[in-house]
Image (tube, rainbow, N blue to C red; front, side, top):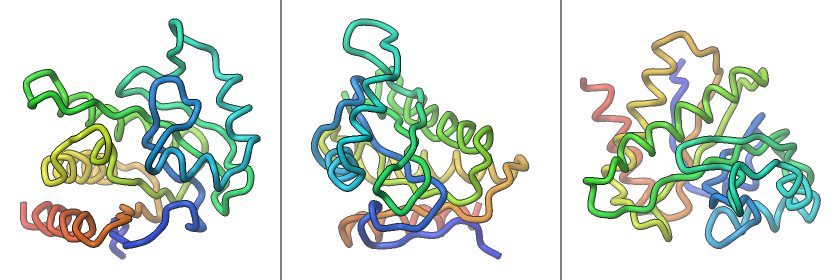
Length: 178
């Protein structure tokens, strides 16, 4: 059984144990997938995020880290919030920070008994990360976790647009060829 797949659609509608939110450091909602998740989950998600302690002023989840909350009105049980890096040309440790997002989200999933999880294209929207590069980083980290024994039944990469779906599909194909 292939545990890693790609779907074109709305991550907020998926019936999985957890969806991953490409959030900002404050975890108080925003645009793109973050805003969509907050709207679909209802105001309880914002309240749960506000209860996460700040690690410094205005920051509840530093870039590359992850936090977990209930999913409230979503069909998923949990939301794993992670903060991807803003693309600054590729020489500022962006790949390492993005890889850390996937590793930390998957570690939280494992600790929480999650067996099915869906990821958006982290950092590819407003944060400007090149989609192909981000897809390669994400698929590499997911494959490494699965190959390392992480017990997941399913990991779904969710694309909201056809172009991103194609990029994610190519990244999975390339990883299989390695």
